[in-house]
Image (cartoon, rainbow, N blue to C red; front, side):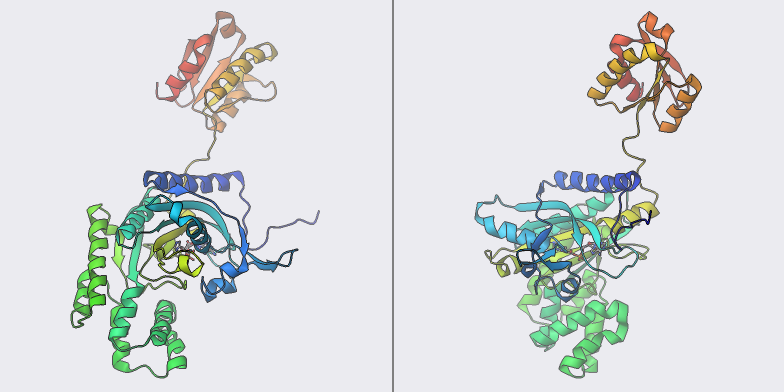
Length: 437
Ligand code: HAM
């Protein structure tokens, strides 16, 4: 048979892969719940218009879009942010504040194939609506850190790079740049890490040569790596806007430090984020070794709910991807064992013992114990081999002699110790044994 393959950038999830992804989702969901975020979901297919001009050129060029049978221009969702803005905007008045929402969902972008980038991937999205102050950033940065620390990753494994698009705009304004020039410069800054000096072409092509002294100031600002350096760089300017931004920076960094998470944060003004809608703080999570693409990204987007027809509602949020997170967990040896491996393997003497074994198997499973048994009659030796290979902690032995006495033999498969327990106490005995004796 000519074999079919999945499309490039789309994954099959065999049970082992599924189990790894499930572990990631479980940690994210548990963490979001500890932070009291509410879970929501939304359609995978949206009107194309939702993403036009709002997400930014890069995402727009990557849309999986088509015309449906009713002649509608539609697109698979490339991200959650416009959708969640539409949903919150439509009911903002009725929603209990603070609005703290999260989702775990699949997204589609027609990306060039590269390590850590696929065409279908999952994201954990978390967003806070209605809070204009930096308290929302503190909450979200703490959540982002815990969503990664929950796998056993530490400050030696990943870091959050914090930056600020408003601060950049106010700074460039103070240097004398107009709005269009500032936008072109931010695009250059976004590309500077990868492209070096070539990144400034976008600016020079539209606005002419960039004064050497000003360029130096921009590059020096981009290299700022601490609050102290930032304060020093802004000291010469008498701008209220800049002073207010600095106050917010101090609040965010102090809040995150008070939570004991200061070591996870790096001030890094080279992060400006490609997406079009960000307005204030922006942040990205990276692995420390730096050989993976971003783990997560987010920031404040105070204008988007309104742009999509909703009320004027400040918002901030982030998304973590499952692909790079999975690679990092794997690299650090933190992937979990296969899910749903049996805890108990039932060894059955022969046809006459099967009925008694079946009754107890069903009782154990109804009590939530993971139980496996051989479908066919097998020699004891083969059953014990299967029991060890299954990963089960215990074997329950249903032999003719034991059943005649009204008992079952429990064998600890690690140390091979055995003991007999009355059949009518089997569920309680197995539970005690699984809990550690
Ligand atoms: P983003 O930076 O485009 O932001 O994506 C966030 C994360 O999703 C990335 O850091 C990466 O881990 C993962 N990701 C993105 N594209 C791909 C891909 N093609 N393959 C694998 N993983 C990918 C956003 O999507 C914003 N909507 C986040 C946000 C939420 N901002 C505010 N709220």
